Image (cartoon, rainbow, N blue to C red; front, top):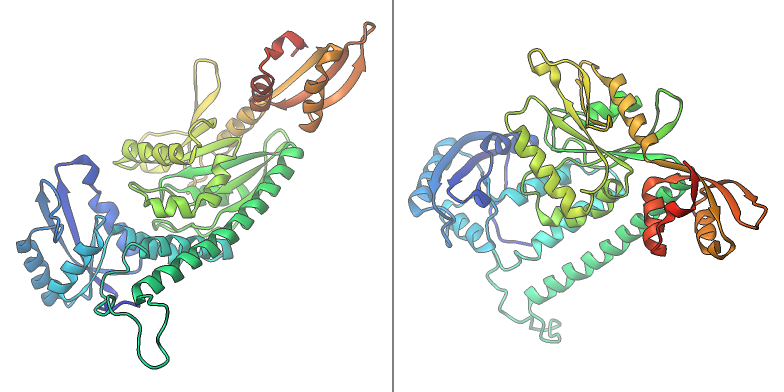
Length: 429
């Protein structure tokens, strides 16, 4: 589609230190991203700036330096650790005579390599098309010309308009298919809820050890590599807890700082496994120098998708890389587990983690005996819809006696829905 320089396998990396925190990126993480994409790093060009240059993002002098490095190393792609505008990409390519990719383009390429399922491929294509739709003007030399000539006279639509329309049509088609997948996922979640099976979703910064932990807990064989975004497609498995109850464990895509909005939007169906989960396992690389920053980035994404209010258990993983660290459970003032220290690679602290998950799963259940007057038939009906009534009887005065068991969140939601203080009906709990 584009008259652009071809990409390649050897890359020059460009990293700029900006004064503005919103523009700052991590160089080490950038190098890991590039290697995860399967590229060979030939050289790294760094610079400091107060703000990006509107035309080239970096100064003209740095462009010339990059061009010299490219000729010396014979690299065939230049990758920026920042998001470039279409105009900036085009201008740099003209000077450097080399393919230029920005941070979003790099992450999209990695996702395209990692997508194996039908849903994953659709999500990646959707993200790529949304990104591409903003860049259609680049590289074209004939876009202003109307289609014409024998057999080509049409309604006056330019080639650019045609391409934009085709992309819009394809985006709509993919969104419809993903909506269907989303509805199927919702049916699965409703079935698990009816069966009273909790869903525990693993979230965390990319390469924190989520898939290794998932494989250990479920005896699955999900791809677990020391690469960023090794896991892309969500996987669900049943896990038995120490006291005999079961939960569904979901392994999801890793997060990263400044995760492109195209990806958050495209992977909303996948991320809904986290939004609809009963418990989140936030896996953290305890040995990482950027541990606190990574935690903050994960909470930012969770907030974006509306999952920041879900009960969360922090799993401080990779303690085998911290001298003196031992497996343990940390609790809050009420004795509820809030943090578990583990090593998935060394299989340390796994029993403690299962114990903590079981405590949280049980803690979220609400069991009580209710006494409802006859006029509270609507509440009784809603409890039946939730399959929360285990036993029912009638008192001498005609009141309904109900033994119930349901999610604490559902009990609170019922009170809000009916605008009533439901505790007035509780005999014992």
